[in-house]
Length: 215
Image 1 (cartoon, rainbow, N blue to C red):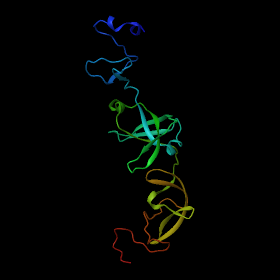
Image 2 (cartoon, rainbow, N blue to C red; image 1 turned 90 degrees about the vertical axis):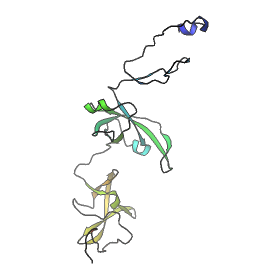
Image 3 (cartoon, rainbow, N blue to C red; image 1 turned 60 degrees about the horizontal axis):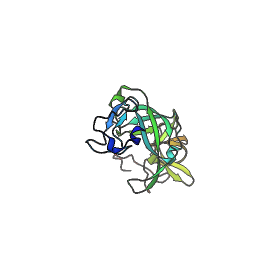
C-alpha cells in the first residue's frame, strides 16, 4: 500500500526484502536476471516437497466412477508402485485431442500420496502414471479382453472343450486394460480362445498354437 502511494521519482536505490508467504523450497525462478518488473509479477515459485500430490488426467467417463477416498496406485515414476488415495475430482472437463486425433473430455483427479521413504525422490512436475481402484471383486474368474466378443445382445467366448471350440455365453463385470471379470458362464481354469478369427465357429476342431498336430 505504501509503494502504491509513492511517486516513482521518490524511489531510491537499495535492497528490497521480499518475504515468502510460506516456507518451502525454490522450485523455479521465472526472472533470473535484473529487470524492471510490474506489480504482481512472479519472482520465484515455492513449494513444500514434504506434501506432494499428484494431478492425473482421466477420461470424464472414467472419472464419474471415482469418489474421494478411492485407493490408487502411482506407477512408472522410476520406482516401486506407491499407495495413494483420491482427494478431489475437478467438476470441469476439458476437450483434448488424443494421439489418434480423437477429441476426448478429460478432467483432473487429485491424488494424495501415502507416506513412504520413496517420496523423497519425487519432485515437482515429475511424470507418473496413476491407477484408481473403483471396485474390488476377490476370487473372481476373469477372461482376457481379446477372448470376448458380442453375440447378439450378449457377450460370448469360445471355450476349448475336448479339442473343439465351444461357443459360450457369459455375463461380464468390471474390466481393466487387460481382463474383464466373468460373473457366470466360465469356471476357473477353463481355456478360452484369444482373438478368434472368422474360421472359428462352434464345434470346429482346433489345435493349440505351437503344436505339431496335423489333424
